[in-house]
Each structure stands twice: as C-alpha cells, then as structure tokens.
Length: 153
Image (cartoon, rainbow, N blue to C red; front, side, top):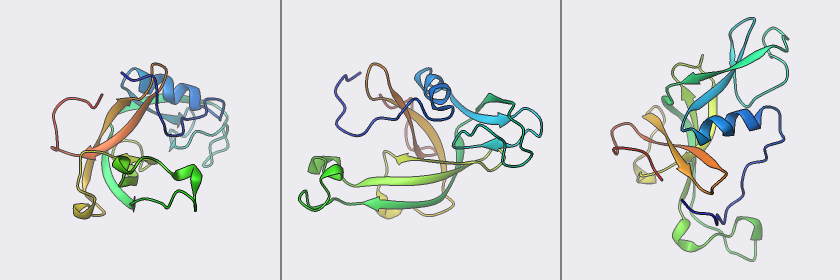
C-alpha cells in the first residue's frame, strides 16, 4: 500500500461519502438505498429523489455492471491545465460511468483499469476492483469482466 498518492483524493464530508469510502476500505461496494421505496441512488443524497424520504441504508452490491459511457483522457499540456497535469506514465486515464446490474440501474463514476482504452465499447461487462491508494483511502475502480484475477492493490 502506498502513502503518497499524487491525484486528488475524495472529500469525506459530502453527503454520505464517509459511509461509501468506509465500505470501500473493506473492499465492499455499498450503494445508498431508500428505506421506504427501495430505490438505489448514487451519488449519496440526503433525500430520496423518487419518494422524498430521508431514511436510507447502505446496501452491498456485487460491483458488476456495464459501461454506460466513458471518455479517455490522453494527457494535457502542463501549462494549460495545471490541476490535471500528472506524470506522463499515468495516462491515458479512462473515466467510466458504470450502470450497476443489481442496484436498480444506479450509475457510478470511476476509472477503468487493466484495459486497452481503444478496445472499450459501451455495453461491455465490468466488475469492481479496489485500489488502496493510501493508508486511509481505497478507491473502487472497474475492469472488464474476466480481465484478471484477484484485486488491484
């Protein structure tokens, strides 16, 4: 596990973010679910957009889904966008929106790993892997189903 991570880290004070990342630290993907109407929602919110209930729980899901859409960031000229200037060996970065199969079609934004970005297509099956980026933070990321064994570390 690394203690230095040179990309932005999540903010834990946003609505429900602490619970989401606490679960990720245990290598579990948990999605907020309304206690009344059972609708899943991501990102976490204080109120259910479907029924307006403020009651919810965190439900563990499989982490399997399909690529809803994605984009590939191939790099930036450091002078033009300094906040996105990472070392050249960290590109390309594949940002993906995954539709989770067992979370009522909830969508989650993350990164793809272990893939050739030029071979990705919308609708491809993916599964969650967990990246322990610091001693305190674990990030859920996704890879193509069947692309590797075990979890990313």
